Length: 412
Length: 79
Image (cartoon, rainbow over all chains, first blue to last red; front, side, top):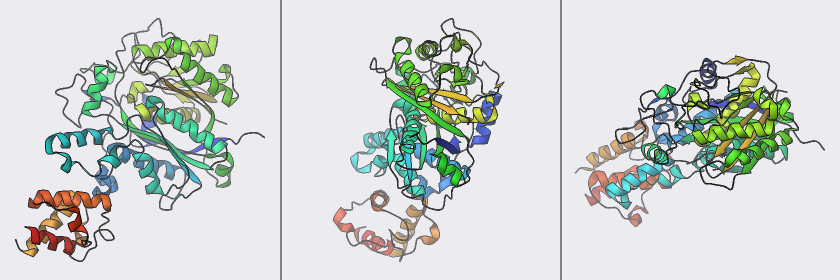
């Protein structure tokens, strides 16, 4: 028996490039940077003073203060993105979605902002003054639970915390749930709001972040010889995934197919990728096998492309291992050059980018790529978007812990 | 402090700190049903009362408090 096919029928996002899908896409293909000096907190004591923040979003205004104060910012962003995705899929956000719908969300560090605030309060005012909502804001599954409550999602729920691979794994596991007939529809997404003082300070301590404080918009330069680390970003992205049959029966608009998913683990080092990207190779091969495609079939790779020296070099090597000579032909780009690194929200965002690329036949560029690195010698679609007929796309996500996820999307 | 003054202070906390719609905050309003203050929210309310009125409230003192008016009475008796 052939497996059920899985489609995407709704998209929603809030991220450094825009507070909806349309603004985000327009900025992606124009090559706009969403990265800037941090405005939401004081950076005087920090070695890194810029990030990809979500702009012009007031949670109190969006959901009312009484509701907003119960959630960490990562939760606000999750509910906002989910609402856009549900409306885009032509689903009624006033009705409970019920037990035929599941939810799988990915996040790297959950409500880290709430954690920081609670520790601060404890230090300053003692245990009796800790916010009683702290636990429910900071637990990594907070967004999953809050989105489920808001929209009445009663099917199976999962929260995946494989760091920067989290929401790629979420999309992949959601695909498997639908393919295996567990439910017909899954709300799959990712969320992160790690643009906080302690988190930026801690990532800076492990020399993971770019320190180009003078030129934030040019700081994230994946695959460039002068790249010096990733740039912290925040945001949430949600995909409405369902069986092809369910989508056709309700006359839904179909963006594309989630055709393949591969996951693997480096089992090598807690932050550094395995030499040559062995785990990445395994994930990409498994995703191709799952999609019943060969490397020759892939038109576009949305790379993990973090702009760290280690990732970009090893991801390039891994693509060469999987794609052989074809590696030099296929168009690759890293949209993190524009959004920064959305951590656990990255995989879902880059799934959205892959699907919109297929739909519009446009590949968004890797911006700030000016000085080639001899260890990064593939076609990364530098600086200017490319119009091209596209049928298939692959999206890579790799996380601290050695977690790897690759997804394959098809237009038809 | 007069009962009325305590009510005005309580109302201020509910509206300013907890974001509750001002028109809902009456002496008769039920904390859970009318103001949507759940079990987690009650802990916040107690913290806000303790800070505002510089008192301490034990959990068992809250057993009979389910309306704004009952909360106001309790606070009035402790100030």
